[in-house]
Length: 232
Length: 247
Image (cartoon, rainbow over all chains, first blue to last red; front, side):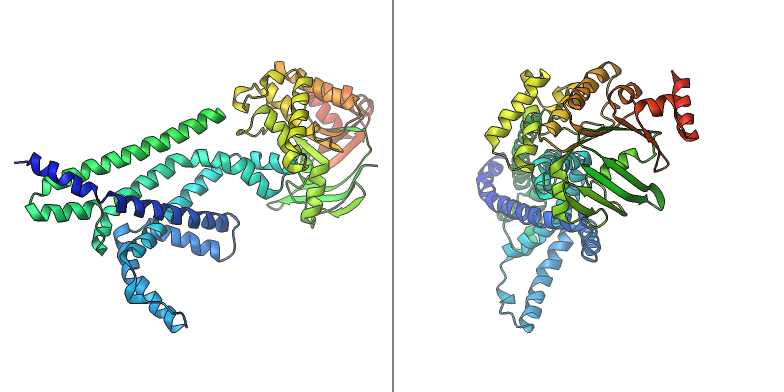
């Protein structure tokens, strides 16, 4: 039978692992966003070779499970550091913290998904807006920052929300490389009392609450922006 | 002479859109371009302010000689700062209010301080009788109001030439008159302009010169009376007859 008391007692222990889940998701989003902007610029400017390479990389990342990517980075990154040492760098392949591996793998994953969403949001802004800005003497850079990007952001928010929520949920896999986030903590607590349903139910509730809060937050921001600019 | 274009050529996907255009415009002239759709009228305007890059051609403008196919960034910027364009679909900035739409070009295109730019924008809206709408976003304005603000956005920059690209084509018929009156008023004030339009009464009554455009070439050029009453070329007659049959 479901042990409600065990579930209640375990809840706070599992909740205590929430910061790591959020840190990985947030840092990965920030890394991913920075890289995604560079990817979009390179692809939209059609920089020879680089844009084709990035298109393949993005499609490769989007077409493979994040758990596989996590393992590839987990085993591949130390080997890359060994290679770098051979080239004269001074790194420590054995001392690579698991959290750095998580940031790298999830950051790359976020880059791939965000770059596609940013491209879609960019193309959804009428090109005439950019041309009108140029026609009144704005430089291309100013036309982007004043006119195109603010409109792009409004269009980006729904997809950005999805990607961020997916990242939060996907962090459940970093337990596989030894990091104890919500799911990892639920595993540990359940193994103490051998009451799996109770702890996984706790984890379920925590994920739902976190995702609901962020979904509402982004919806609020999007609503405010649409209301502010009367964009339907 | 304010603007001279020599042998402007432009191709798209192997199709010749502009086939060696020669055009001179004097200060204060109102040049109206008429002609069938797809004849290259809009492409001509877009090549003049480098929204598209010509394959070849020369431009003499504001004392500068510019190779249209190899214009530098500073030459392009100079031309854009001395011209302005009014678009068929208004293209007001959706994330800016009416006032901001007019002020933005002054601030970010011409380096004016925000206070002066905003004062000019408010004055421009007052002149249109739209000052009560200064804080409205484009989505809250009618097509006619948007286009009139689009015209104000261009004129406030005090450009040497305004390029009008079918400014009334996207408007409800009842709003066309108001917008054309605004343009007519500008013409009477001596504003140099090139207007691409399908509004023949405007071409007849406001133009100082009418160009009939077809297949990427200026087929015939003359005063409104010469073009509408005594067209010389067969292609021009054909076009005007087709228009007459439709009314």
